[in-house]
Image (cartoon, rainbow, N blue to C red; front, side, top):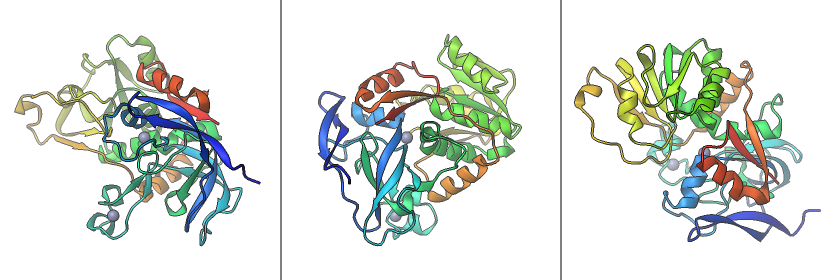
Length: 334
Ligand SMILES: [Zn+2]
Ligand SMILES: [Zn+2]
């Protein structure tokens, strides 16, 4: 028997905090599954939603789009997962399937998307519903806690890495060594790439963390890497990193911004972009990204570093992430 109500941590936009709330356990609609949440990662996007950096889509929304849980009920017609199956719920909760972007296999750019923990309630709760078509089966090798950050930090990191040339780039720079970069670093090192990690200036422990995961060089964002890079991946939400990263890539190199929000990019000399350097962003994910990412993981020894928090302590997790006190990823456990 499922309980009638559950604990959820909902956004209080005015206070820019999360507030505990008793909510009815949601009912799965047609094609949807009800998931008992076993772990939910805390993503920087959640901070942007709580802080109002992103325009609010839904008042009192429950954030959380790195959800690992167990299917406990299925709506009409939902048959993709058995009850009891372990699933992951990512940021892309639904794409329309009809718009030009969906039809050109770019559902990440869908004109009418529903995002988990933004347009619909997410995993900062004991239960969540999801469209089963947009959920993932997860590799058995990874327990719930360590699998949670794969669902956004891992997936968006993977898409960013792919758009930065994937394994073709020999030397890559990772700017902002948080949850996404700590996963991409391991992935890139396993592919034989040389990784340079850029942290906040003076963040010696962040740099040591990057080296412990195989980075060949780690330094502050005000430093130069020992050699020119083929690609730079920016995960920190700081616009001034864009010209800084452009200055480290070779002719024809690429700079990819992996975050959903960034402070303004300062004006910079055209010479930094000259030489056919490219600058682009990454938006969301496609289901194909997920399938490819989890397939790649099955052959890659990769371990996420996590710090777990009780669901009721979600504000603490958010504060620690904001203050840069977390090595790897924060994960809520109901
Ligand atoms: Zn669409
Ligand atoms: Zn995210």
